[in-house]
Length: 281
Image (cartoon, rainbow, N blue to C red):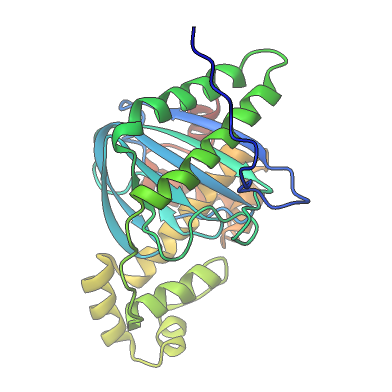
């Protein structure tokens, strides 16, 4: 028989006065990963994503990353990201979200320090990390086990904090450009009735130059990016709230609910109502 004594004088990674809460866990198999989640952000929670099968291209805060089986992806609150960017290759992922997270050395609802890349390889810890996600999923739907699921999610956070010290990759240096400044402007104003001229004026250039450099760096036109941001937030609200479709349309910058639904259907090949049912059944 072996008995191990746990170190008593460890320093907790959690700040005082906050009670982190597991908001949801999502298991997206390869059959569902073809349904893209467009550009969106979460204002009051962090997300931890594990790729347990396949690979995909992710756009996170304007940077393009390739992630594969075994990679963790860490999203701070306010991080604009495309969850299933590009065409995933049999992509299968777990995702957990927590609110009221306060780590000892970071602001509220931040899990990723600025110096680290959002992609964190799990390497030799993959099986261990995957088992924690599976346990969180299992306890989440068992009666009277919500607290167990919550503590398992906190265990996941502490493990990631430890892994960042040994496996964390340096973040790419981000040099501001016309495109990045235009993207930041759109991210802040996409719910408003902005036009291409408004975006160009905000970054002190003309519409021709803006369109050219934005397409070259981001891969789409500025106004297409506006639509993607609106669709991404609409998807977020459809999945995570019970807001009416009319209210969601207004929230993301559309005064006409029917027009919003037409744009959504063109983008997703299904209506907002069908999308909500598909994700929340």
